[in-house]
Image (cartoon, rainbow, N blue to C red):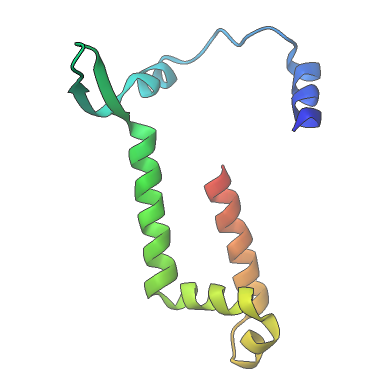
Length: 105
């Protein structure tokens, strides 16, 4: 992580990025659920938490109830046995890497 940070500081510099698009600022300030605390302050559930929970639910349903999910479990457990069952191991692995990259992004 320190190598990555050093790489970024070398190319970007140590100055803060000041020109942030207004859409990003609005997204950062948007809360799905807002409640008032006892001291009068407001407490909110940020939209990114709701998006995260939706992605978790979708991935859970995908892995639990679809053939693709069972194929991912089979290839992750034993690729040789999965190949003998007729699963295209290379395609499932490629899809797993693509999904992991998408979720990381």
